[in-house]
Image (tube, rainbow, N blue to C red; front, side, top):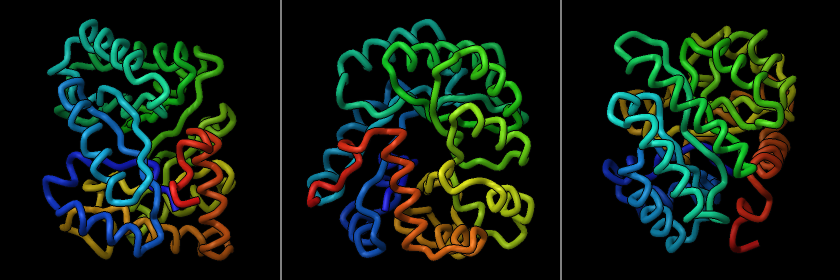
Length: 266
């Protein structure tokens, strides 16, 4: 299985890497996409990915500037750094992400967030790469940006929006990232939205070490735990978990590239 959204460089500060990889493999997770948040962390992100590869898992890399870092990264400088990094890592980058908008309270200045996300969307188009979008209380704003950029493709990670927003994103070729929130019994609206969405538009993700599921609340999240949200999603969609896992993996390879997300032992 493919975990399409993980912060491996954060995870290894909390958990021993060999154990994380061993649990991934035992759970059947053989591929992970690790996403970036800030220019000063991309090199470390790349180094941890290499360490995971040595331990026997396939890792895809996405680089971007997260909206939570908008008050620490000057937009023009950050976009220039990303442009240079994408040129340097040409052929080794699956997507531009994690990028987006966060309109919750106590978030960085909205104008800086807007400058960063729009600039990064444009860079993704220039490099023919998909985007990995962070969205909190900002789906309508992001949809407007997407409409103004024909050809932009990607995924809204950890999707928790409305059914109408989900349908609009899917109509524009975007995928919805299914995170551990689905495992919480009280997530009735989210479950209903995902149950009404076509399996062809869904991706499985952990967001590890963040957003732990119901069975691991209060613990660091791990890629191995995506099997738990897979089980819930399979029940919602009236299918079996292995069949659904194959469908979701095919979706991930369609978005990010088949060769890059194929386990090295296949």
